[in-house]
Image (cartoon, rainbow, N blue to C red; front, side, top):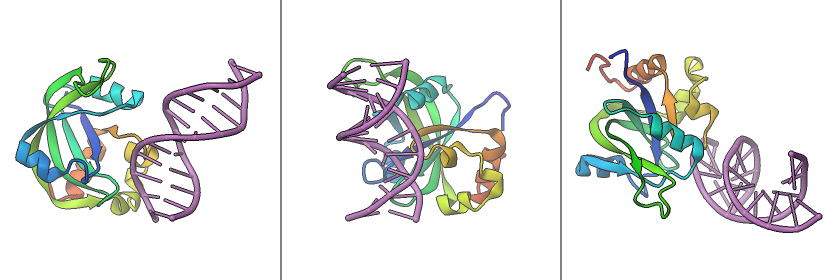
Length: 143
DNA sequence: GCCAACGTTGGC
DNA sequence: GCCAACGTTGGC
């Protein structure tokens, strides 16, 4: 893990946009965020940052890892240019998906923003938590 | 500026 | 389908 990289978690309802679609499209604009806190997180993302791809509602699990391919720019799906999106590139699927139930059962992940602010669709993940979650998913964090 | 009403998200 | 959390809206 490089020291100057930030980590995130983004949520998508698989009915709307799934990991499989992300893989097929390879690079996909992450649009439709209409929450100020989430927007702030999007705007903070740097090219090369990594994010967990989480399926909300259906599945409720981390299924893959994406990389920020393009930093924040005006969301074309917003009518007034007030919102931003980034481009996400598929990196790798999780060898084992990490479920919300597992995350909630882990005391060391109790501070995770995913747990604490369950309604926020774009949340930061600390480097420590990133490594724990990668390990839970059977992912080699050395890359 | 306060707060009730209402809408949305997302877990259960 | 229900409900908790939380954001937004609008009356006052």
